[in-house]
Image 1 (cartoon, helix red, strand yellow):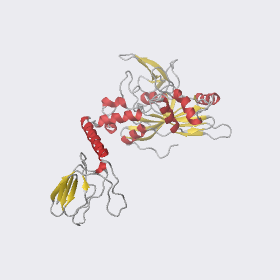
Image 2 (cartoon, rainbow, N blue to C red):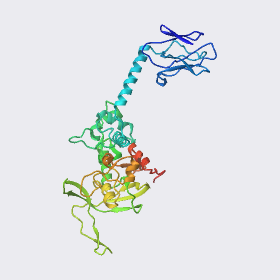
Image 3 (cartoon, one colour):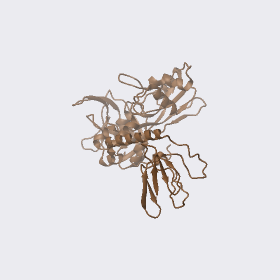
Image 4 (cartoon, one colour):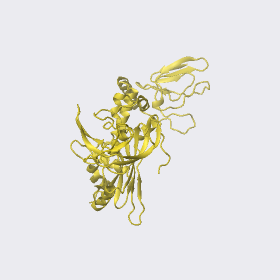
Length: 413
């Protein structure tokens, strides 16, 4: 049997003496005896230990002692580890108090529902770099640099960061360019970086910067004359039919009246169906309408949603969003502006899509726009080959594909 004497536990039959330190609750690290019938406990980490230790007399199942003991790095004889090293009692007591405090805080914190957890996840994935210090944004852009040579750089633009600054804008790409160039070329550099084109605030992906005004003007001219091949990947609500084709419908900006007056881009078709529905009749084009042409092809689909590759031939404002929503009737997931004709409201999603995304319709407004600049191809100069830039998908995009069970294509041309 065991008996206690002062600050130690002693076995009358010759067990090893273990000190008991006041206020420390943990498991015996080791119980060594000469008698082979005594149980031997191997050392354990503090965070793996239970609060109580029950010593049971072998064969009888009877509890013979319950006590608090010190934690040390004691090991079995012959291991070569110094048994004197270990945590101090005060340090261990402090650790126990912190663990208790943490447990109390966890009990007091209300548990989040699966939908609330999903909303929190969406916020974390899509709002990481919108309100950070410019140096943090510049560091992230430097880390994800896609390409650079003596004339240009290609960055991976994050979600929610506009290309240009303005009233109420905390961060923008142009604001952090002076910091970014110093991170790339050194603090003493006098170089500058210039934007060659723009992406919308909600659009992610490949974006070109130039090291000189001359190079920037050259790249801008390539974009203006449609010599840069652009490919975007989008997740759509609905499956386009046919699965591949060309959308050639002019677009114009129009004021939408109602309870929420606002401006948006709309289709301005030059054909209409005859009254009998038997033929297409050409109508006079609106003077304010601009020609807009988009090639598309479905890469994969599942559960009423699709991964679609878009290649804009022209470069009209919100062209891809308008053509998908109003031209094909398959709005881009997270496009809350062009999911309705005459109002501003969160995107209405089918029940099956909401279930797969782990959301309720009331929380659909937290879905980010799934529009990603996947590839840019610049024509070669003189004897140089074309420059093809690929940009990886953002985390929220890949997580959505996984939830919707849409497979990523192994290879795309």
